[in-house]
Length: 300
Image (cartoon, rainbow, N blue to C red; front, side):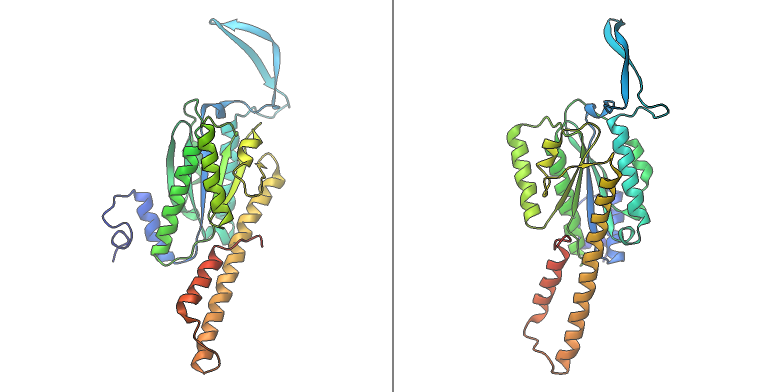
């Protein structure tokens, strides 16, 4: 039976979704969904403070007040927030592709948000993702609906989890990576509701959130979505290493748990056949334990 008959029956879907369905069915390995929720509002075009200095005073050009700037550090290019965001994403994707654990386990998706949210890349196995796709990210209007970005990200994560479950694959605790300058324009009530939804998932071990500040960012708005009230700064190599180490640790920890539990169940079946142990636990209970392990906290 084809994947569309088994999972997305009677629904339309993109070529990316169909390819991922086929891959999930063929691969059969546990997956860790990583969704990048990316700020592409107009403010991301702003130059990162600290990398430039003003030259001279204000002057009028074509009826507008303008200033001139130059590089603060010789030879160091002036970059915008969106440039920094692309650099961070490319570096992270490259690291995911190079690492032997994550290359075979991670699937990634990219959601962008300005006034509205858009899925620019459905979930794909990381080894099938072209890093060049990040280069095509562009800024939009001068609105920053972080709430819509988070809502769409959670929807895509839920879809990916259901698909994996439909094919009998385990799912590691999903990771939501928020990259933003931390200045949303959403209504306060909407932000509070989005935070409540995210925190419930975190507390239920159904989600891990990594807020990453870009440029001279507002940490308060990003911190509210973090389970540890921490915001990472990607201008710090230490923070980047900490993020990737956490991802790799999650995959390694759960993989070992699944292998050990599968071995114990297999060993128990042999012992039961020999009359050594009681089999009253049942297959359903054993499977429930494996499902629990697949969602357990890697930091414990």
